Image 1: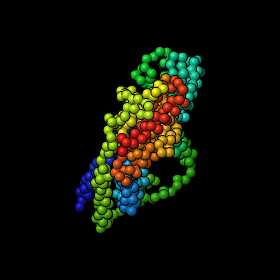
Image 2 (image 1 turned 135 degrees about the vertical axis):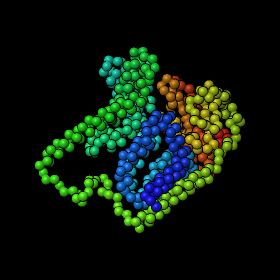
Image 3 (image 1 turned 60 degrees about the vertical axis):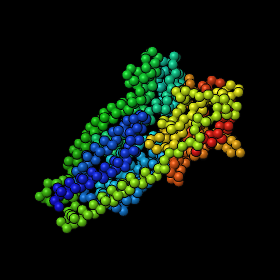
Image 4 (image 1 turned 90 degrees about the vertical axis):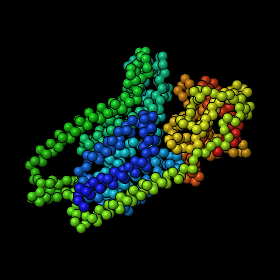
Amino acid sequence: MSERAVSKTTIAQLGLLAGFFLFLYAPTLAALARKWWTHDQLHGFLVPLISLYLVWVRRDELRSLQATPATGLGLPVILLGGTLLVLGQVGGVGTLGEISLPVMIVGLVLLLGGTAQLRVLGFPIAYLAFMLPILEDVVAPLHWPLQLLTAQQGVTLLQMLGIPALVERQYVVLPHITLEVARVCSGVNYLISVAAIGWPLAYLALKRWWSRVALILLGLAIGWIANWIRVVLIGIWSVWGGEGLHGPFHILQGMFVAWVGYLVLFAGAWGLAKAETRISDQRRAAGSARATPARWFPLSSGSSQESSLVGPLTSPPVSAHAEPSARRVWTRAWCLAVISLAGLWVVLPLTDRGPVSLKQDFATFPFSIGGWVGQEADPQTAVFRILGADRELLRTYRSPQGGRLQLYVGYLTSQRQGKKIVDYLTARLHEQAGEVKIPVDSGRVIAANRGQLGDRPNQRGILFWYDINGRVLSSRYRAKLATLWDGLRRGRTNGAIVLLSGGPLDGDERELQREGEAFARALIPILQRHLP
């Protein structure tokens, strides 16, 4: 077979394998795109494209390497990636499926190309981590302290400018308005965006480790300071009576931080590249009098090829007899890759046993609970709602003493197709909440979360918990694990969140807490007759 025919066959095989891969991961990629779009992570759309460009930059190195399939290493990694994908689908834990994507790519590269090609592709594959929302979970503990620090620094700068301002936790109190440095305004998400651009820029534009580190740290530092300046500009705009909280054309929204960081990154890369050139020229001039060292890899006198420290001098020689054997080995590895992806495609639908309906419809839910009397509420008045909930209950209950509580129950028949009980929306419920024990019937004690939700003028006390197949859980992580366990054992991923909220916190907060816990004690047995 001619080299050109082999090349066309290889391209066709790789194209077919890529089709299998994209078809298998289409739901995961669609879920990622939704998160990028709705959760201020627009850099996620750029990450795959930048990763492909990084591969294209090193295309000559890849061409110089002969494929040496590492079946013993590649298959276990593919199995690991497939297991994570199945667990993510079975348990409704999308994060596991997202992590499996780069793991699966590593396994395929090892299986088809071997360790040498993985070394060349290591950075482009590792860079894909920036498109995974799991990074936000890693940096989530930074949100609250950075909210406080941003509010404090913003007030300090406003006072230096002669503008009267006070700080109360995450609030910036101005003469005629109070601004809140919300979670999204902490700047953490946009620092991730700056880092996502800074890493490949440093990799491509700079050659020395110190300059690469300096560029990334510079971008992060400027982005951080830009967030403080953004708060100051919003404060000045508000004091001057400007319309629109984030200024004209909303230019002072969070993306302001990212754009400032991007400008600094490109300017810094240009300056550091110039510095590297000057240092290299100085060292070259200082060493011009020394003897030229011998080449590490001497070339024959008739060769015009230069030596390289990042790749082999030439592709390993392959004899005419060895070429068909190498081709058979690669084809066998390709068949294993296709069978693995096709097998996962068959297994995934078998793990879903369908949705789980309520025991009793919410229409039969009682309007009288432990002396509290309820009435239907307008869904638009809900303090919190689950996106895409299959069944919802929203009512306002009043106690004989005149207290009022809003009850919300959001139920999902299946936590698949992008629907989640625990996600970034429910994460904000936990920000100012702590666990509380509530005794219920028969001496049983449940754990719930008690806290606050909303900005200061409309801040409300809340009491909430998760119900996963009859298990009342306060921890979102335990709720995730319970869903995963039920998915593996029973093929079901249904679940609910129950939330009680009072009115604005303008009265006795302790009395509100007592009323909420008393209502919860009467509510839980009734919920268990409706929720599976």
